[in-house]
Length: 114
Image 1 (cartoon, rainbow, N blue to C red):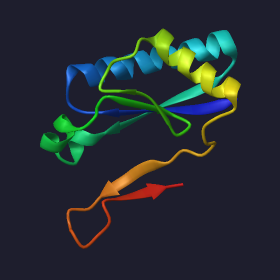
Image 2 (cartoon, helix red, strand yellow):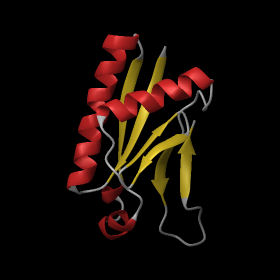
Image 3 (cartoon, rainbow, N blue to C red):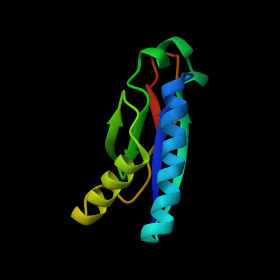
Image 4 (spheres, rainbow, N blue to C red):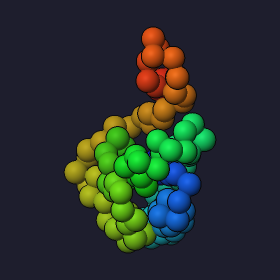
């Protein structure tokens, strides 16, 4: 089984810790449960560092479900959330990732890749 652990990060220490913990959780999921978990970092600070600082980051999303927002979960918490989502059969199979943002008010706020 494969899944993505999306980590929305900013340019701050908590984001860095959340990303490290996601990698540790992915390793544990592979070793202990045979699940190939791929960590997908999304850097919000590339777009606008001021807005990213005020956003709900770090944020961790698994199969479309936010499992952490504005906090740094431990690797164990991430693993537990992933296993709960998989056991209940919830979430979405596809990964939806914001691909770009637009500064033009006439345009959409974001485009999603499927």
